Image (cartoon, rainbow, N blue to C red; front, side, top):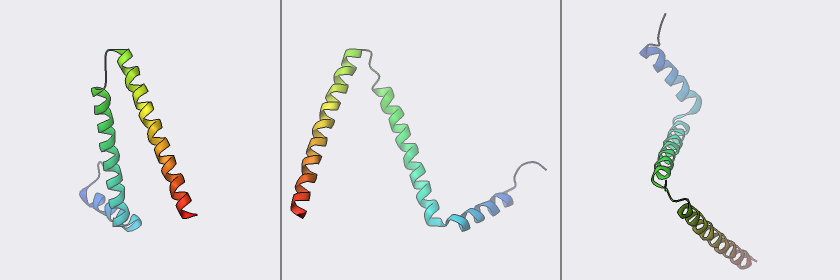
Amino acid sequence: MGGISIWQLLIIAVIVVLLFGTKKLRNLGGDLGSAIKGFKNAVGDEKDSVDTDPAHKVEKNSDTLADDSSTTAQEASKSKESQKEKS
């Protein structure tokens, strides 16, 4: 009449395990845990990085962009070198 009993939940759990398998469910649980952990870290980082000086934020962003572009250039040169070695 109302609510789900423990036996009904157990039957549902057995059906889910039979359909998906334990390995896939374990991977799904790990992925879900990683996603939640990443979300919490991102929210915590956002709270920590809140700054009252807007000019300071612009400097941080421009430094980050410069770092990202130099990293991308380094990766591109490494991939070109590895392609030359393969030839």
